[in-house]
Amino acid sequence: MALKPGICHLCLQSRQLTESHAIPHALIKDVQRRNSGQTILVTGKPAPYRRSNDSGADHLLCEPCERKLNRAFDAYGVLWINEMRRQLDNTPRHDRKAVDPQRMIGFVSAVLWRAAISGNAIYESLKTDYGMRMRLRAIFETTGDRYALASMSVANLTDSKKRFSPAALRDFVVPPTSWQAVSAGQDLRSFFFIVNGLLFNLTMPTPSRGTGKGAFWAANTMMPKIRNRDFRAFPPVRLMLGLPMSRQAS
Image (cartoon, rainbow, N blue to C red):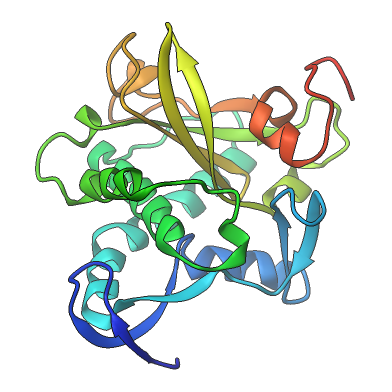
């Protein structure tokens, strides 16, 4: 792995920087193994989806800081995602799985933060300013309740038209993307990414209705229900795929 001199974005020290991946490289490699070394990226540019060997790498962090995030969040996130995927595929009725809520939102915010500070072109649809990047960083760095800063959810991606099989949906990767949202008249900034057929969504600030943990955590905090979500009813993905914005349109 090639190192590059620079300023680490986490510790702000002048050091040799290692390659970082927003979505953990282990997840990207699994997709590439199934697709002749390529990832099926949905970015909206220059085409709705395309094959690429780009893993989203960039020199962002020094090795100690990269290891710190990997141990705190990435290793946990990869394990949980892969186990959840197998569980949903093999026993569809078993759609609950124990999760550490604080660690999971830390994982999601760390993915989004690394994408936000990266210069890699696959993250062009992630629009942030300095303040937003610092707020994403604050989520995984806080020692308090991370859900006081943002809400998040996880859903299993489906296709109501059945034009994309479950196996095909697992091979699509939507890099971290941002979009505007409104809840009860409150302006929000939402972020999402899709990997291994699971859609991760984070919203800042926490919506005024309900708790910061949101519907995803309402039934059971430690074993949330992983609900299905039709990508055709999720406006940002429809827009990126160039589909009509009417939910009834094909």
